[in-house]
Image 1 (cartoon, rainbow, N blue to C red):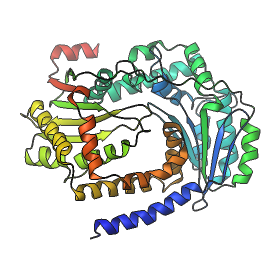
Image 2 (image 1 turned 90 degrees about the vertical axis):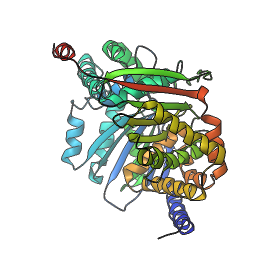
Image 3 (image 1 turned 45 degrees about the vertical axis):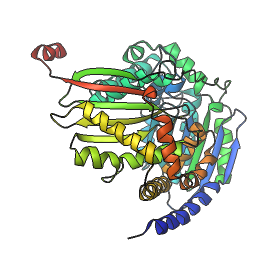
Image 4 (image 1 turned 180 degrees about the vertical axis):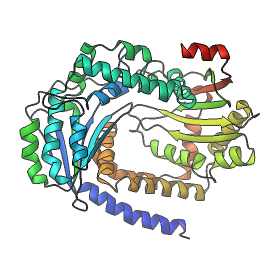
Length: 447
């Protein structure tokens, strides 16, 4: 078995190589319309990832159009000036490729992975939908219905998802993190065609995007192709900054969610920091100490020794503005939420008072570093991580600092952040109160 010192040495060597690779950008340029392009050649496998990251997500939405960022994630695949709906994916799939996208609170990210001989066609398709997306009633209404059904399935009919929707809605009063990424149903009902056009014009402007191309291609040949196809796309003024106007929470907020379910559960959130704070690293490691693996503190005490829960976990948001450090626990039959809450708070307070062991810290650092290195083992993984750091952290080059940041975290850091951020006054709690469906409920649902 490798001891912590040997593991750390191995990670350092692997991490050093990974960081050197990340610094080896073959070309970086910005077009006249503000579109930034980062090119990284890697001829290991005959594959290319083309990706484009937009500095927009639910954080950039206002009341009345919540969910529009995610709605556009769907609309972007539904036709443009020179390509019919579904043609984008058909061309990729016929050539052995695929496409995907995701929307979060801070970023919207699109990517395709494909054989090198498809690069010119992909560039043409991407330029066409960025400059001349088909934003019409048919596109809007089709994707509106799909997103609404997605909301019904993934949130309204999911007990844990609904709990976390209520958690963020209660924890944030002013900040847009109050709103779910999928949007509120009433807003999805009422987003207009003009809303869609205005949003696209404001946030899908070239100056609000960065392209990452990673894989088996010639970076010298890429620049003239990008200039030819993308430079003519008109740009708009960069959207204004979002003001983090959320005031400091002055006391615990508690919500009871009554929903059809078999077992009670609890979701707990503490406001912490945004990614610009160095405390994001010890907070991440603290989440690992608490709930990663069978020897973690929450698992060992609450799941195995006391047998209070069937499921338990902890994690921290990595957002532009301060996010939540969250806990989730589902009770065993006959066990109470109050007992699980009490034990969670005891464990947090224990770390705030006594810190963590050297073994716990080494294990958490090893896991964090290895997880991070694994993210850079594919073209898509590299593009995704660089895009995230470009948009959320402000510069993709900051990605090379991560391994060292984790390595420098101390036991005292974990003790300090546990004491600093896990105050009752900064806590929001959602308690699930299970209810049974009645015959009249079923009748109402079937109408």
